[in-house]
Amino acid sequence: MTILVTGVTAGIGLAIARRFIAAGHNVIGTGRRQARLDEIRAELGERFYPIQHDVADRSSYPDILNAIPEAFSSISVLVNNAGLALGIEKAQQANAEDWVSMIDTNITGLSLLTHTFLPGMVERNRGHIINIGSVAGKYPYPGGNVYGASKAFVKQFSQNLRADLIGTDIRVTNVEPGLIGGTEFTTIRLKGDEQEAKKRYENVKALSAEDIAETVYWIATLPEHINVNAIEIMPVRQSFSALNIHRKPA
Image (cartoon, rainbow, N blue to C red; front, side):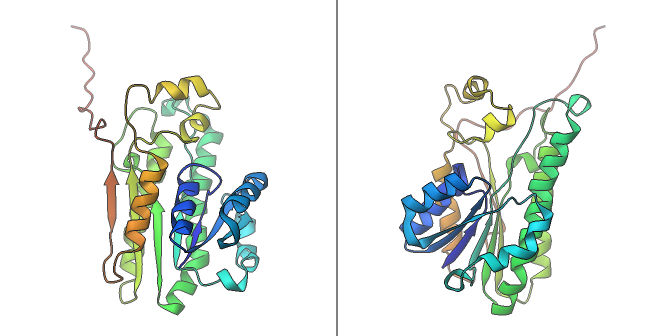
């Protein structure tokens, strides 16, 4: 298979690329950081084809298809992994530019990349779109505001794609992870505060990027008549919060 993975320069995206290449597949990896792409190419070899691409750049989409060489052109699996959270402030205190960045990446970028590659999948009647969502798209929490809303979009978009693609052999899956450690996600969310980011994972065994990569690999290599619509994954030490009630003093 040929797998296209966005946000491949770190974390889940890199783990997915490594997993598929270890199993003998080809991977196209996109990301913004050319230096990191070059390092990954040196690590993974000729089965990895890097493309510098920012999913939030709307003007770049007409050109991305032309950047893929013929040997990699039949995309079997599109993994929409690129995404980010910015800030933990409540909505009334949040930075509006952070909201725009999350929408551009998590919603617009994911949608446009899907729109770019879906027609080829339908023409070949073969393909699988795997979106990396989040439990934040189901369960609200203070400070989740636009990030959680963007992942709720991913959930609903995935389901609507399934509805549109009935009668084809194209599969669509939404992967919804909970707490994941060992990636850049929380450091980016906290605007580079590495010490504060580390505190979020103290004394808890979180999921790893490799756990999600293994899940994506399993889903993508199931028999072609099986579609995993959605899969929610949490570490054992993470569960659901009680509904919040604010009691006024008597």
